[in-house]
Structures are given as C-alpha cells and as structure tokens.
Amino acid sequence: PLVSILLALLIQLVVPALARKLAVLVGSPTKTKREVITQNFYFTFLFIELVLLTAVSSSVVKIVPQIIDNPVSIPTLLATNIPTSANYFFNYLIVQSLSYSGSVLFQFLRILYITTIWPWFTQTPREEAWLQTTIPHQMWGNVYALFTNFAAIGMFPMVDHL
Image 1: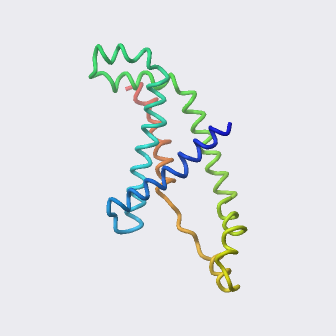
Image 2: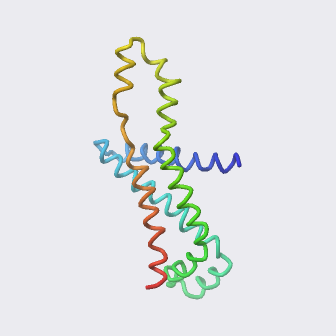
Image 3: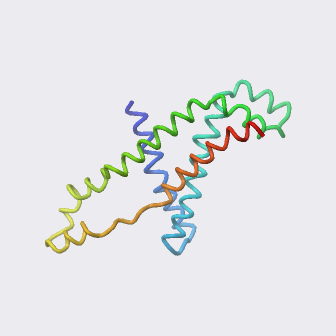
C-alpha cells in the first residue's frame, strides 16, 4: 500500500511540477501560457502512462504477434483491446473523481499551510490576515489535464464501435 500511495503522489504532484518547470525552460512568458504547456505535457504523460501502457500491457501476448504481422493495424488493435481493460479504466475514473472532489472539498494543503507554514512567515497580524484573505493561484494545468484524460478514456468505447 505504501508503494501505491507514493506512486500516486509521484503522478499527481511531482509530474505536474516537472511539467511546470519544463514550461519555464521552454520560455513561456506568462503564467497562463505556462499552465497551457503544463496541461499539454501532463495530459500527454497521463495518456501514455495510464491509457496506452495499460491497454498494451493488459493484452501484450495477444497483440505482439498481430503487430509483427501487420504494423499498420496498431490503432485498430488498440481500439479492440482497450475495452478488455475497461475494468481498470472504470476504477481509475471512480477513484480519481472521488479523490479530486474530496480534496477540493477538504482542501488539506490549505489547512497544512495555515497551521504549519504560515506562522513561520508572518510577523504581524496584518500579514497573517493578508495571507488568509488572498486567493491562492489555481494550477489549472493539473485539473484540465486530468479531466481531458477522463474524456479520452470515455471516447474509447466509441472508437470500438466505429
């Protein structure tokens, strides 16, 4: 259980932070542009890591001989084999949506900041009031990438029927 918690933290916290640093290194001039680049990087990572690797690894024994015989049919093979791993995707959607909505409601990071970090940085009551009344910057690159990944997973059953 500890390994799975650490992997979830790695995917949800470290990867977006690295994507944000990459956006700075790319040279995006504004925070908005950085968030758009972060969303693109993070969605690409989530799509490859969660969707494609899961779909391919769940049926790798069946797919490899077919890919060797006909490499052009990779999209068709993915479209037919992704529904076999649908149970994983449904569980992923449920867990992610419940954990995201729970974290938005509970706001544990804000509670952590208020109780442990802010007292170290405020010397006067005015500074403390300013910190508590300012709205923190929402990192939309994390949020939109997650929901875009939900939409991409939701499109796979439609691809199978086309």
